[in-house]
Image (cartoon, rainbow, N blue to C red):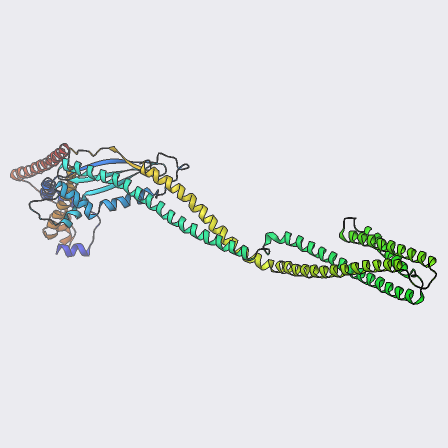
Length: 537
């Protein structure tokens, strides 16, 4: 009924009501507080004491500066420590330590090897120590918790040795594997470079003369061949003219000889006139050539030679004509003297020899012109093919240069990696150095009885408040006058204070004394327990 009235007429926070509850229920609250605290604090003394041993390992940088020897293993300490931790936390490693030291051989529990490994992993902890400035890892701690302090120290020592040795072994293995990998890549690059070199050399050998580097020489040779062809053609024309000239002289000689035979007179100066015309033509041509070329030019020298031969022929003709005139003056008959015939025959033979020489020279010139034209076509074909050859050679050269660059880079990397491997073999790389040896714990790390004392006090408070609240919830009695006033249909005009008898006053004093005594006792007990926990920690 009282609950229904309270729900229908909610009232603001009433301090007097709660003070009344505390006055009536303080014994219950204190008892429950003491029970809750005692349960938690007592349980902390029933748990097995466990001791934690720790050691500090410093991460030492390589003894050689990085600008002299570049390490060929990973420099990420966090990943490196995590990897080593996973290797040491493996089942095989942990079982070897468990069997060596006889860990987790509890008489009450029969644990399998896998269960022992799981428990040991829970007891091991690795903490990273970072620099306060750049937050880089400078060291790390290894912690192990056991029931025996000496056992905890021994296991921590074994784990520290495993970390240090595993770091050295891992770095050596990684360094060797890196060097081996680079050496294999270098061998492949060397083979690829050799193949590229063979391709380039084969292509250059197959297209010798058409390479871009030979363009200037090809142009120079082609220009020289064209000049030689022009000279040969000029010489051929000159030889042909000389052949025609000599042939005409021979024909004139023959006609003159036939006339002298028929008429019985000497030769006419017709041949001499022809030779003079030929000589004038050659001298005009020489003068024209000298205006354009020097005396060393081949055509100039050929014309000069031809002039010399023509002059010699003219002299021969003049001598022949003079001899013929003298012979006719001395002779009275109409017959030609044998000396005249002999002189004329010698000149004719000389002209015929020159005619044969002209024909041989013409044949040689024609053959030389044919050879020159063939070579000119060859060099023109080389120059025409040069753009395509240059493009293909550029592709091959680009592949060769890339292979060469890759080979040089790998060669440098292999050299640096070998130096780094030698440094790791000499244990001059990044190392783990133990600064603090594994500690021997003198006090248990678990359970923390001071913390358990505080937790017990909080638990007792909650238990006491919960108990008092539960009792008030099920108590339907009216304890204060305000509850009576709410039940009356009319307003209260006056109140009569409670009249206590001496017995009631004595009972109230006794209850107050017991309440304060209980509060003092609970406080003393909790403080004594906290002091004992602090001193035993």
